[in-house]
Length: 208
Image (cartoon, rainbow, N blue to C red):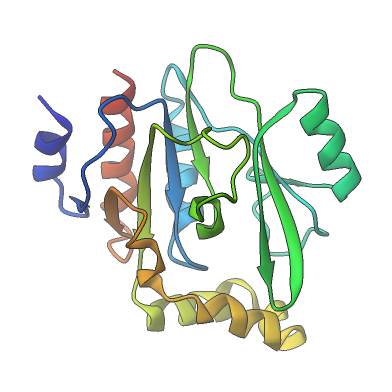
């Protein structure tokens, strides 16, 4: 069975670009409220042998709607120190609503396939460090209609919408289709019942 065969059986996943011949990482991207957290949580909960879901580091303060299992909130200096001591490997940055944020992932456990859940900026050419860290990564794009993303943001982050409307607008301004130039596989994250199950099956196949 091939990756194409696995995707052909899927309701929510489809191949849109030729994947790497050798896959050494899986990167889940998607615009705000496209469904990344739900999908990443499914992979994490599946506890697939030889798959690591490294913790993400973010240089901002935590918010009430943040998923605790996903990220650790640090200063820029703390992130730099973690990069130097080797506890953080992949790292990148993004500017949103005029503010710059930096991100990194804990160094994956040896001998595992890392599954990273990140914003779309990780795929901007020249933005990720080390430079070729994701050269052989399978990029999976979570896609949901923009109207659904707006509804989800209002439900998930009412304080953000009320207190920081400029940031909320900036997050929604990046359309769902922003993933299309980068993704090898698209996930229809509006299919909330099937998408997590089928993504876990795909990751199991990749690491087999």
